Length: 320
View: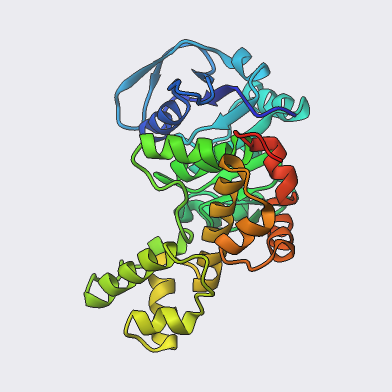
C-alpha cells in the first residue's frame, strides 16, 4: 500500500492538549518536497471539546473522518479508564478492517484495547498505567519500557513527549528516514531517541563529569561509524572500566552500547540508501557493517526488507 497521506486523530472530551499539539505539529503542511498531509482532529460530535488542561478546543470533524483516513490515531484523554462509546469502538475496528494504519499515543492505547485491536499483540502506553492496561486486557502483552511498539497495522506509543517518537517512527516507516529527519529538524527534535521508558522511571542520574565524558564519546562514535567501535574502546575514551561504562550507558540511555550502535548504523544506512546512489557494499562499509551481507541480514531482521527493496521504496535519487 502507498504511504499514508490522510491522517485523522480521535480527540474525545478531556483530550490531552500535549497529544493534540504533537500530532498537529508533526503532520502540518510544510512543502519543500515533504509530504502534503491531509490532517484533521475528529471527535464524537463536532464542536468545542474540553481538554485535560481546561482549555476548549474546537474540533470540526466527526467520526466519519475515521472512515476515510489512511492513518488513524487515538489520542490520550483524561477519562481513559472509561471505555469510549460503541460508535467510537466500531469506527476504530472498521478503520483497521479496511486496512488503515491504526496507532495510539499514551493512554489512547486503552481505546484500541477496548476495541479488541491489541488482543494477541504487544503494546505499550505511559509507564504509569502499563500495569492497569495489562490487568484489564490480559490478551495484550504490555511492554512498559518501550517508547513505541510496531505491530504492523497497529502501533502504540508511550506517554507525553513520546508522542513525537511514535509519529516520527510512523513517518520513518512509511515515508522514509529522509522525510522523518527533515520534519524532526523542523521541530528541533532528534529523529530517533535512544533507549526506552526505563530511563525515565527512576530518579534521574545526577549529571557529573562522567556524564559529560559519555556525551563526548557518543558524539565521537557518531562521527566514526565506519570503525569497529568495540565497547572497550568506547569505555577507554570515557575514562571508565568496561563494566562501569556499560552500567552508566544503560542508566543514561536505557539501552546497551551494542543496541545503540546498531540503531545508529541502520539509521545512517537508511539515509544513504535514500539520498545517494552508493552501492550497498560501500554503504555497509561506511556505516560500520563491513560487508553488504551483514548489512542485508541486519536490515531484514530489523526493517523487514533487504536494503535494495528499501531503496526502491524510498530513494530520492536515481539508482544504478
